[in-house]
Amino acid sequence: MSNTPSEIIYLDRVDSTNSYLLRNPELLRVPWTTIVAREQTGGRGRKERTWHSAPEKDLTFSLVYHPPGKVRQIRLVTLVVGLAVQRALGRLSGITASLKWPNDIRIKGKKVCGILTELHLGEGGAAVIIGVGLNVNSQAHPAPAVSGATSLLLESGEEHDLASLLQRIRNEMIDLLSRFSSGQRKDMLRRWREASDSIGKKIRTVLSGRVLEGIFRDLTEDGEVILLDARGKTHVCTGEIEYLS
Ligand code: BTN
Image 1 (cartoon, rainbow, N blue to C red):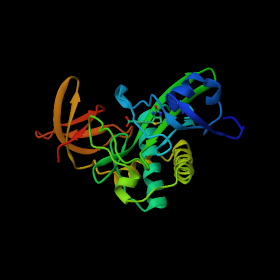
Image 2: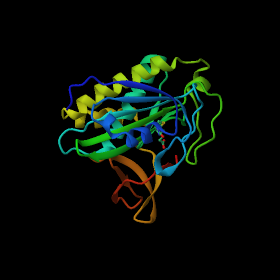
Image 3: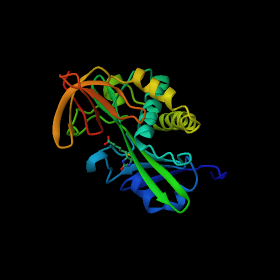
């Protein structure tokens, strides 16, 4: 790991903060380097979806994480980051958000934040680019395909300071990811289970091309979904999930 202090770089306008880091791999050498965009013109979500955010009203940033050794469990990293955002929101705004597997942070069932993690394997080793999009002071959102969207303003009736949110979320991310790096994987999974509303829900997903319904029973050690079907059989799933209850 490099000893160079990490930087927070502010950009007025960029297509996507994740893409910016992928195009500038020298920025990936220093862990916790952060790119913040006042405006994103081509924000990307999971599954090649578009991520919409209002310039200077919503928070869009990407942070560089160096996974330890050969640990390349991007799925677990996404879960840890979800926890960090949820904790930061609770501490700063008193808002109780819940986690929907794998990368949604929701308030009263509506998505307020999404996480996009991408792995870069370069000469200097592995780096994970973690993109966070949080709807903060925007009034309206084009609904994503899977669920309605909301913002902190819409839920709390109050505007929130973007700089304080960024600092708080970034600090929580660094804290929890450092603990994860030092081997606190089980603890992170336990905390995720407590913070999530996914466990026990009736869900639909697709596994090997087949639609599957059942109960979200638990997570595997690698952060995959354990689904229990109506016949009492368990399946390990990694596809998108839809809540049915
Ligand atoms: C999702 O829910 O599908 C993930 C959304 C992630 C959006 C953030 S905004 C900052 C970073 N740059 C991007 O282009 N995407 C992520």
